[in-house]
Length: 122
Length: 111
Image 1: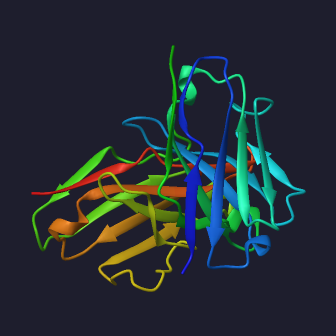
Image 2 (image 1 turned 90 degrees about the vertical axis):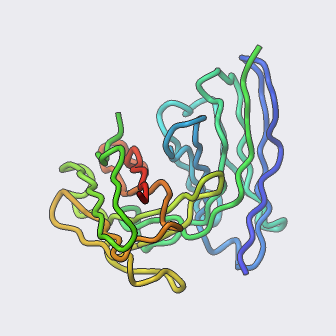
């Protein structure tokens, strides 16, 4: 059974930093791309960032590029999201999601973690 | 404003059929990108409902079916049940943005 467990969320002041982790189990972690998807309070889903299986390929939505950094440690089956220069607009539940699909245009998210809340507020 | 457009809400009585549309553009669905659908029950994480335009993961009832045509896609729920009350999101890939995008979500209410 695939299990994804996020951690590292919490309350942070504007301009602050936070690192999220996603511990994965139940599948060969290094074989799959992994993504972060967020959901602001009362809003819809927004894809944020992705890392290819080896970690060499990294992708970001424009609004976080240069502020967030995705990485993964395949020896620990863990995905990370280092978030810096946080703003109130980054307040959301952040989900870790396992990627599937043979290409970018076919990719989807077949398993999701329970999510972790990040609140940016003074 | 989302790159993929969905109606904010749809509703139906138990046993009825509802359809949710998802309209993309030449950079998403019109460019040949697949459409996938997710169900989000209240206060839970999203769950994959349909992938590759029409396929259901194991365990998803065949009451849920989807289609795609050029720039648009749709999700249909037949025999609507109280447990289907949730938010539904479509998702695809945007060649211009070079990233994955979601529709704004559709709230399904069972009357």
